[in-house]
Image 1 (cartoon, helix red, strand yellow):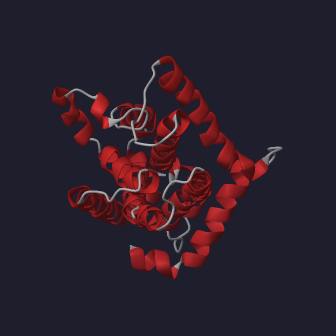
Image 2: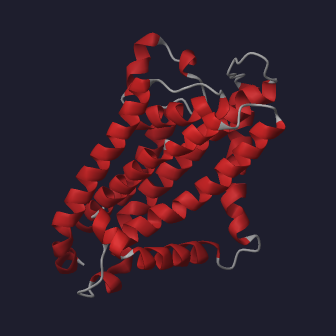
Length: 263
């Protein structure tokens, strides 16, 4: 599958550009929404969890706003990327039935373009986070670069999940109705808006079973706190990325011949 995507990389790039253009076509602010959307959600969640509920990440020498906003923003970037891929995946193939019915069209490029379009927002948000870390005097050098490298398995995870859900969405249209519930579970059962220490020991098993938990912690610790992620956590993130990608790519590759008959 990777070889096919590399061979059709020009097509993936064109589909990504088309996806981004159609997403912001007609909007007055255009691509600026890629930044305004996560910032708007950050302000909303920060008010509810930071002001109303008083959640804090206690880091030595950090101001209150930095204690809460920077850790939460880093985690939300991961969540928004994964959740967008999951939300769009079930209709990726179904919505392009005319293209799929063309004999020579590589259907996998649609999934790759969806992930790349979602990753464009990650690039913007991580750039904003890097600037914020510099302005507030936090570590933004080697540790931040490590956090960027950890996006490789996260992208693999998102691509594999997109492959799997896109293929399932062709045969079981109910999948698109479940993605909202899946994304809600990923959000509230992971330490995006609260630290792991706020969860009782007896309930932490639910968070550890959530793949997003490991991704959030792996990116947030080096990017925001300047701490090396645990070797076990990094291993889990890379393992999740490889396993989910392998399963999703295999299922998509084996089932794509039946797409035309169903569509």
